Image (cartoon, rainbow, N blue to C red; front, side, top):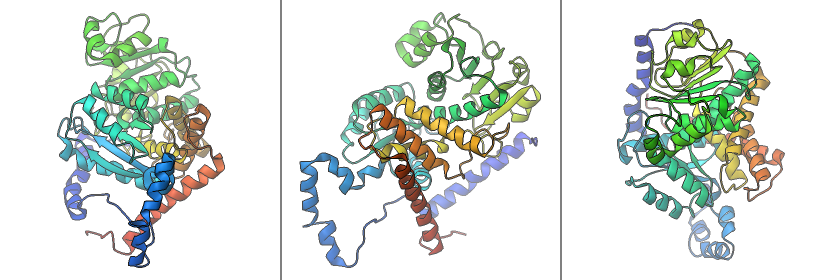
Length: 448
């Protein structure tokens, strides 16, 4: 693996930031509304609007489920944020968060054929956000929560998952966890270790870290062999701040109760020592994780350093220190853990069967299919997870998610897997082809 300096990496990382303001201003946003129906002449408006549309309204009034047949609800997802934790920028407000939510909409459409619309709310109260989301259900087939600060993001997700009639997803929690588990499954195959037996340490106990730990346990890891670490050290039910954790950070406290039965305490190096797997969703490095700590891990160790723009430890440093497999969050290193591999296909699958929710088991099904796509191509130390441009990932993932939803009884439609694959593949192919056609015809202009 080629070594680069911090200056070289940051210069490369800075280029998109230099291009972004100019191109965003040129296009005046990234997503909009396109027409799906034919308009042969102005007489067609009598069908699509008044008086003809009244007949459709009456049909839906008789049978509310027909809204999925007669409107775009079947494919509509709202990307909802209050702007309190936007990327690494913090609480910058809903207007400043809007470009991120539009970007999410672009990825949903191009990768999953999903019509995703950004909704940035000028509201920070979690109970009011929950109320707003529940009131929006008639229009949308699903919600993607995004860039909402913890701990309220946990309450919002848990409440909406329990009380909504449509699937609700928080990408910062579930998306990162799903793709991490996918990479881990293949990494374990390479090093020939059983997930039920590994010792796993997760550095970082925010929304991503907590859900990574949860989903790894759901995938089969033993809670007794799990350690999680926050800024104050190893999470433990005997820690000095346990009353604060119980009162204000119940998700962290849940991890304390489920893991680390021996109540081990200490800083990061103590948590890393002897681990088979180290997963970091923490402070960008380099130097957050030190090579000498990696040297204390078990043989054939696995290191996921997912911070951006700079991983917690350089990949080559981890390798030289003894790690067998290293993954990061960057596309210019092997084994990128990229959320975009998850949510477009997962929602495609959930929408296609009209799922009422997205369960943890559906996330595991997506992770296993992601891992299988890479396995089918031939996994190696530098290829444990598919790349985003391997577009057949998404219909395969959609089928796996939909099948699990049907199996669990949370799907409104039971469609054969082969038919669902064809549906997903065609929807995604059409979305991509539309963009390419509009570019070719000049309707999406080239600013250069």
